[in-house]
Length: 353
Image (cartoon, rainbow, N blue to C red; front, side):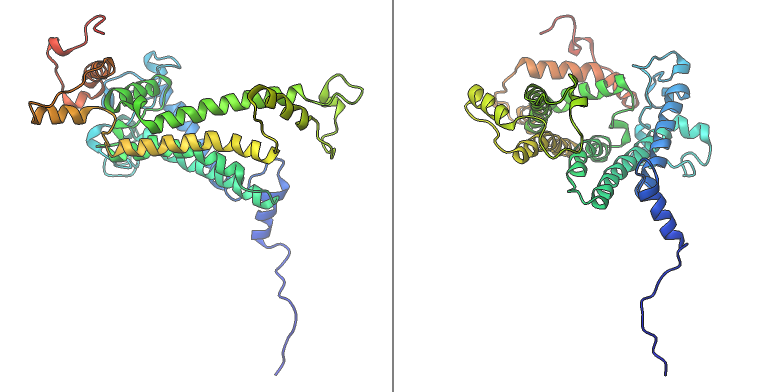
């Protein structure tokens, strides 16, 4: 009996190794294995959006003109959501709704599900690509963690909210004016601005903007002006070991202004990561609550109780009146499939506030 000792070596021209080298080492811009997901999805998402906003009408789904071909501009063009009767169908081109008829597929709103799904997979792939590159160059995964926040908001607004409602119809359409319409809808039907999760989201985004401005100004103010060049980009070597600005000076300045200041760069930059990411995640959690129609902050609960209990006293504010006006104004136009007709006396008229 013969026993062979030694390591098993693969052939040098192994296809996997060739692909791995090209994806992770040979390209000027890192592609990575997740790039195989990102770039096709980004191509289809952008291509679908430009195609829809240029040519495809929303007359069959929303009774609206929504394309450049119909006279819309950049603000009013959109890819509208599918009709409400299709509920949560994926609206595949080869599915039972369109039956491989591209024109019918566009009329039913198939481009919305196409753009939404490819956009979601593209964003998730982009985050995983950051994770892959970080692991490849032995960095912590903080960039990917930060990018998870806008992904959470996108998924909660475009997928989880309509999944909790009757269909994709109630998701935002892909367009500038369409997004503003959706914001008005959220306020009128859910009183979103009074929701504490929205408040945390606003605090996170505006707080991050404030931190970013303060941080940039502070570093700019405390740069060391060594070297012959007046421009600091020529005065410093990008690979130098020394810091390019004075943390001590910055710490002393803000200690005099506020009484307290960050003394540690690691904690300072973690805080700048923590504020916006936490705010966006809280906002995403709040949208999940709205998907389930949690009614703690929209005052509908007191209206229901008042209808059941004649002795229950409601409190009536301008905020409630505003939301009622939004609902009366939007519902008939926004949900044409319901054939809503309101009597004249309940519609907002003039400066009713």
